[in-house]
Length: 177
Image 1 (cartoon, one colour):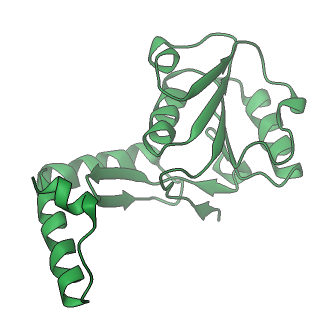
Image 2 (image 1 turned 90 degrees about the horizontal axis):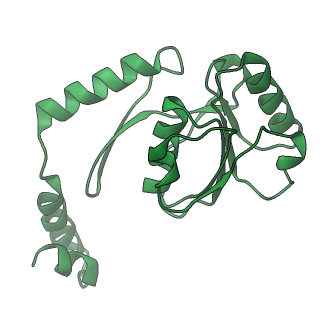
């Protein structure tokens, strides 16, 4: 079983190999989490092309792309089984955490389907068994709880800080204006 990763803002540099629909979802999650993302693929979807903080390398993957210490995480998301396997093998050999989209057993981690509403973060994981089912459950949770939790969380944070005798942070005060 792999390690589950919930990315936090400013986590580091990520490499996504492939630029189709699966890669686009990964790129969005990574840029939302403030990763600096490099995408390597010979053809790139427009939604990846316009994503913030994304460097595009429009060619096929080469093992030399995985310079030691350059990436903190790698996603193999091509539509070619052999290429994904090679990416996984190269990343594992260099000690870089890797998610091989079409082969959970070749991955060293997996990502949950994440619902974010301000500071509220809910992750749903099937342990890599069914990312589609995890997304469906995430959508059902979102529908069940609704949106707009940022204000409630801001107030809860202020109350907690007051109980602990600390002044509320400026970020909280700005959220409540």
